[in-house]
Length: 192
Image (cartoon, rainbow, N blue to C red; front, side, top):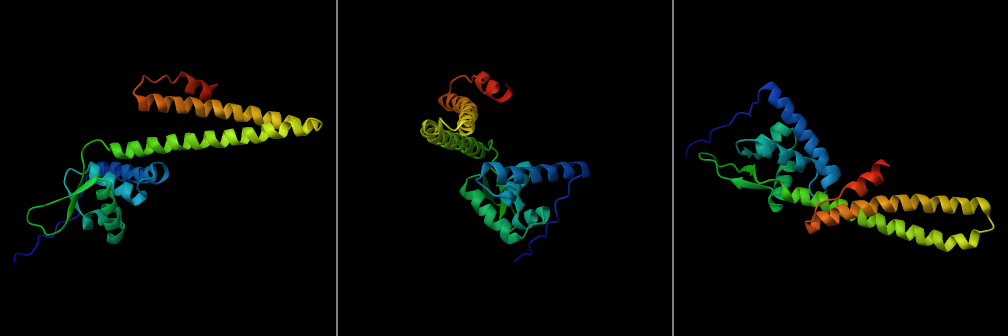
């Protein structure tokens, strides 16, 4: 049985390596903070594979990212389940190699948009619940001038928030329905 060739760590020119490192770190943060589908390491793995012209082994990914091979393995399996990466065969090697699926990462973007949409819906429910509670309270505190002013101020602030989230919700609904996006209402809610 022939001995497997030991592959050296992939080297990139300094300028490229710096840009790659920066992108990988940022992609990890974005994945963890905004997308919610994959954690930071999963986002970093996907970013590395997405920008790599050649498939990489678990050992290479681990070495480049400076993350344990076990952690890499777990996250690669998750990325495979999400159909973001795939295992590929490399001639002359018995190792598993992986590459990013080259189509635009729609699943990640859809997950991101869906999370924002769910956040808008949850915010609207909370605002409406608070408004209902205040509306029930206002008639009971008419004689208490300061409390009444506080309640009216809170209602005004909730109306402002509701206008913002309603505008954002309309933009996302138009997007999902394939209608032309009118961002003027959202822009007005944000900038005015």
